[in-house]
Amino acid sequence: MTPVLDTPRLIVRAHRPDDFDAYCALWADPDVVRFIGGAVFSREACWSRFLRHAGHWHHLGFGFLAVEDRETGRFVGEAGFHEMRRELAPSIEGTLEAGWALMPAFHGHGYGFEAMRALVGWADEAFPGRRMTAIIEPDNAPSIRVARRLGFSAFADTVYHGVPVTLFERPPAE
Image 1 (spheres, rainbow, N blue to C red):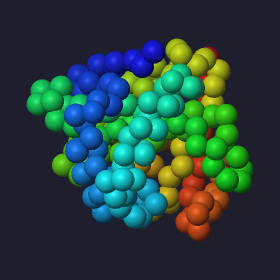
Image 2: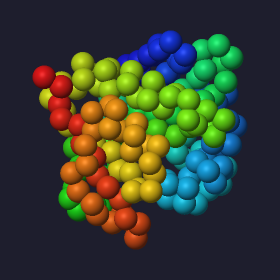
Image 3: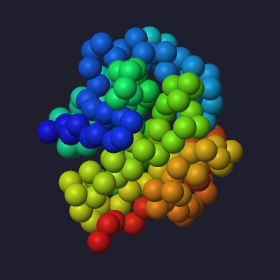
């Protein structure tokens, strides 16, 4: 079952059809994708990504969730875990690969950390003993700070789709 996580400022919940236009705006923003592949997504590509979330939850019991501002109801972005079966060395298959993306208006205010702290806490309970990972481009200092605050540490530098990335891991909670 898809959880609903409450934080002081956020509601972290399943994506809804009425999120789609804001979701497209998120992934069409060059500031958002700058360190996530570098290319904006078309509406069609956004639809495939949007539907992929339901599949993750259905088949794997985890996925990405929409992040909503508790006070205004605005779509802040998304955060969660996925299993992408990436062609990557070293492999991170079988891990909970963490990720987050926020609308630029919400950058720099701790929303990514707040959402991911709730998600990491949920995952520690739902998947005890499961390793968490993250892929972050070395120049993405804000995401590296979030990852480190969440207990992730770098364990490998590699290349993914021709782009240098650092792999981070968070040991399973005890």
